[in-house]
Length: 208
Ligand SMILES: NC(=O)c1ccc[n+]([C@@H]2O[C@H](COP(=O)([O-])OP(=O)(O)OC[C@H]3O[C@@H](n4cnc5c(N)ncnc54)[C@H](O)[C@@H]3O)[C@@H](O)[C@H]2O)c1
Image (cartoon, rainbow, N blue to C red; front, side, top):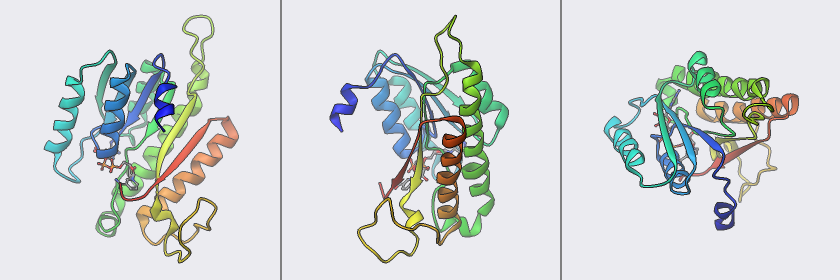
């Protein structure tokens, strides 16, 4: 994996959703340290202690680097906000990590999963699709989004008995709404990738 860091293109603009979150913060920090331009969107929701998220953001703002950090407080289910961010900052690489996480929480709060994980991710896919409309050879050489990376989850393996799990395993039996939204994200990304040639990779994180 180290080799990937060496190959990181610091001329690109990276848009990360959920950057005040746990995994997200470390990614943003690493990109900034490498000298990248990083645009972060987070709604700073109170699923867990907001002061922890604010502390991460403060650290990102203080990260000594040649990179440029921009924070946008917003919700990815807000289509106008997402579109404005894409139009203004023209990201080359998009990393969607913002999501309503947690399996147990989804029993009591199903709305949050549909809002963030389904509508929010759909807005990101649409913005990636329409980034190609903004491709501008003459002025900025911007060709639209070059890569979309998004968080899926090991929860898509559901109650599968076969271990170790593998990407090729059957994952059509999610056992929580959270898992169903993550599996849906994989299907949505596949379709957008197929229809609009958006290079996309989903990462099935286990417990990080
Ligand atoms: N941490 C793990 O072990 C793990 C395991 C599997 C999958 N994942 C996935 O990886 C991603 C990152 O996980 P994490 O542990 O860093 O989570 P996290 O909860 O710490 O971070 C998510 C961030 O996204 C923000 N967010 C949530 N909904 C949003 C919305 N609608 N608009 C804007 N911002 C929003 C939250 O405020 C939070 O700061 C998530 O998609 C999660 O489902 C994580």
